[in-house]
Amino acid sequence: MTSKLPAEVFVYVTLPGETEQVTAGRFALTKNRRSTMEGRFVYGRSYLARANAVELDPVELKLSQRTYATVTLGGVFGALRDASPDYWGRRIIQRHLGKAQPSELDYLLFSPEDRAGALGFGLNQTPPAPQRTFNQTLDLATMQTIADAIGKDKEIPTEPAQGQIENLLLVGTSMGGARPKAVVEDEAGLWVAKFNRLDDTWNNAKVEHAMLVLARKCGLTTAESRVVDVAGRDVLLVKRFDRERTAKGYLRARMVSALTLLRAEDTHQSRDKWSYVLLAEELRRVCSEPAQDAAELFRRMCFNSLISNIDDHPRNHAFIAKALEWKLSPAYDLTPSAPVSMERRDLAMECGDAGRFANASNLLSQSARFLLERKEAAASIDRMEEQVRNTWYATAREVGVTERDCEAIAPAFAYSGFRFDPGLLK
Ligand SMILES: Nc1ncnc2c1ncn2[C@@H]1O[C@H](COP(=O)(O)OP(=O)(O)OP(=O)(O)O)[C@@H](O)[C@H]1O
Ligand SMILES: [Mg+2]
Image (cartoon, rainbow, N blue to C red; front, side):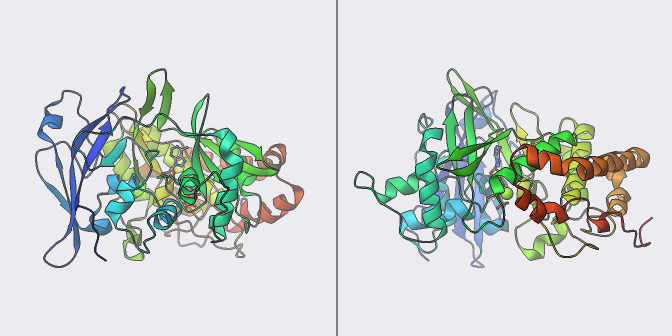
């Protein structure tokens, strides 16, 4: 497909403590001689000359005068891909542009400024003023109707005063993920609003909220969340941990996904890099408090095993830098599943010697890579298993998950294979 857009965009960043963007560099995306999409990024000289310049990501784009080049992820550097929309946001842009297959640069340029992290993109060397207005929580009812229509792939309902494009913009977001969502603001700041889908098996908003509450009980650090009633349906609001509301505007933290830290791709060929163990190694190199973050990652891996969260792919883990230092972000997108097998369940990422097997012995097999003593790791697994087994139901009911939904999710928790010892593991 040919794109009329220029093959180059400016990359902006909001520096720590600031609320206005500055230009960090230029990103060009072109076909190389082998007809492969190749991305090139170079930091601007005046940016590098700043005393407060920060790297865009901690692995691929260190502050340097060199020209960086990549052919992975279609030529889009991980940090830039993390700042562009996924399935949901892309679907909206496709509709908006009326193109079946917009280019990666289209997605960067036509996506709203609510993107995860501190980056921005544009065609002008001088960055635009920061976005000052956001959808308000009051608008959620309209957004839910539009999200439903898009979910069903129906024509979007248009009211006389509202054009289709304005409607699309309401639910258009640069935030990642597949589920219908939008970004909304209230006095406390910005929230990711996740809508229930009409074809959901259970009330996802309440169940995901319950999992975040349960995770906190298990000692995990999670994003703050609450459920609101919107025209008789539940919507999950998750507080954005990469934005902080201040009197002069929003501070923005840089953010990269675990996919970027692992230098991995979404494809199956790249699956061997999807690993908690490798991620622990990477974060030990990058984070300012490696022991703390590695232990937290270990707890997340255990928690995901204990709630059968098999959608724990590397975009569901992130790293943020509010100032100079990088750390593991709070946990988000925790969802149980109820697979048929009670003997073996696999997480999306490797967690030990027996691969992706969500099993206590497997989780323990590589605990040293998470900087944990084996005894300490075993005790923490035991405690968490007790906590999940004994309190998941009460936690779910307390936040309003129905008896019927509890029945549907019950097989997710502390499934029997978690303690099955195949003998292959020490
Ligand atoms: N509280 C938050 N603060 C900042 N960014 C967030 C927050 N929650 C989610 N994100 C970002 O938004 C993306 C989408 O969110 P989330 O994973 O919850 O959506 P989803 O549609 O359920 O995803 P999936 O496609 O994995 O099911 C995440 O990958 C992450 O980059
Ligand atoms: Mg997700």
